[in-house]
Length: 273
Image 1 (tube, rainbow, N blue to C red):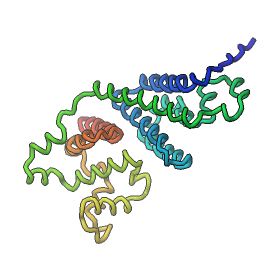
Image 2: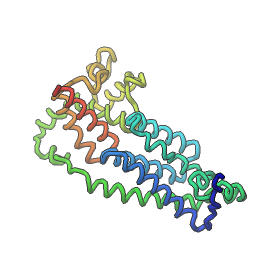
Image 3: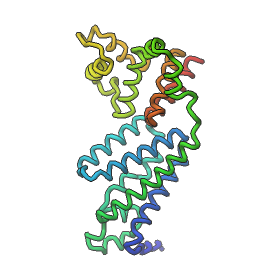
């Protein structure tokens, strides 16, 4: 005989703690599937989503638009490795009218027996839930940083060790473009090769580098950026990546760091073959 579904009907005061407990359970489960750098990136991602949901001025449509954009960036970065995260369906936690049954705080029978006003979270409960989850992930992020290997050389150490002339020499045009490339890719999911928008990106690069743009086809920036990040290869590319990395680390841009580290590892393997 099929087993009967348990009648899950906690008191209203238990709803937020039980839901937050399930969120943390899902989070802990996926952390076991990833390496430290990936754990940090996913934790940062979830914190960004929670912060987004807590913004009073954001509409539902705006939230889901930005949610999808951020998820697509994460998916494009990790591909099939993101499967454990996807399977936990974290998006359900933001469907406030259905989350209590979807995440088994209420059984289906109990949920259907409730009046519509009691099936979902109230505004106050939403705020409590988001705050609790944010606090938990904020502490988790702190402990992940405590476990991380220290940076071998911070931005301040690099700057202090170079004279003004040397700093100008080190901050080459290529490294500026490399920095722009990773900022756009990690922060906004903009990759000139797959988005087909290299001309627009090059115009932005001219603006940020202070180089006057006369003709795109004759632009040295255009020629370099069209090959990013492989305008250089081998040890030279790795050296440039290691040069720009501390600047991202100082700002705790974990998404960018994960991409840079992957590219350093891949390029190192390639030129050592």
